[in-house]
Length: 237
Image (cartoon, rainbow, N blue to C red):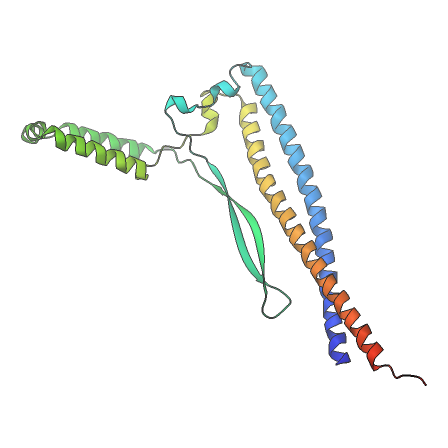
């Protein structure tokens, strides 16, 4: 019994050392990530200030941002998802849940010349329809036309035709200075660093929680061993 308890105590000590070293490493990574994030935000803000000096304050401001009244829906190019994974803990049956954040980007694909030619040919083919079919279309009742419009609206709402993606830097014009592009790249990097820093902090909190749980288990086992030793101690007359 005593040998089994000592073996468990040794295993807990090893796991405590691993958790402590992992926590120290995560603290170092967290500090480095925060410093890099601060540098990226400062550099991006400086590039944005230079772009405003070159183009003017009114040309690089919130006035260029799209508003809901303009009728154009803004599609986010970056989304953050929350993921939860389960890992085996030290015990045989319990599972530990680990929460992390995942950054997903949407790539903006520019249409190729072949695609534009194909679209123009399709439009010309639609225009050059037979006159008989055109007359038959004109003789359709208005009710059918209204039903077709309703079907088209339903398809657009269901998301069958996704909105076209646009680079946000084009909101400020076509020929933008290089500082504005550099600022956009630095702020993109800052967004990646924010997610990376949050993942490090989440893992650090989970590691500290595991360390405290193992420490409580060790203390309870030590108290049980002390009680067992007191009960087995012979009474002196």
